[in-house]
Image (cartoon, rainbow, N blue to C red; front, side):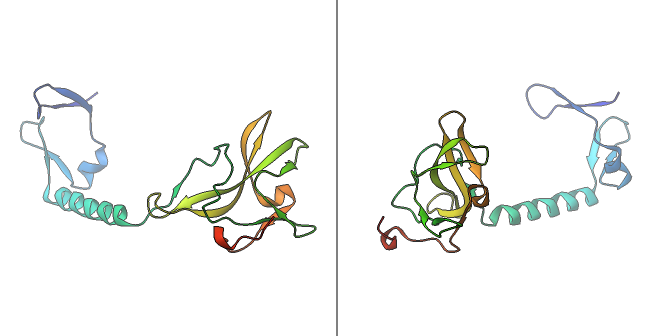
Length: 162
């Protein structure tokens, strides 16, 4: 089995041989001694293109999700999607006890939350967080609880009184 010895630092490290496709595509080649490797100009161009592509991907906005299984009530100072009973349209507020699809008693905690600005602001999503005294935190689609979410989130100041 062929391996590479990296002598670029003060101590040597041993690496597995590069895939043969890199040689076939002309991105790498062995030097005349048959041991040393060289990155070809095509390999250098491919590496530059990859680094540019990676930088462009890193610059795109990301969505960050809080730990969805945290067992705490939804924070009152954040927007929320109102969960409503399918049969009556009545609001199911965080802290309300419900029955899960398996007949266990659970407490509705609020929707999962996500952020596009690295956690500076959060917005509610369409998955219900619940807590079970016997089974810990769970996530359910609202339909599994006989409920649905309103389409638009509601700001804390405009919520209906309970």
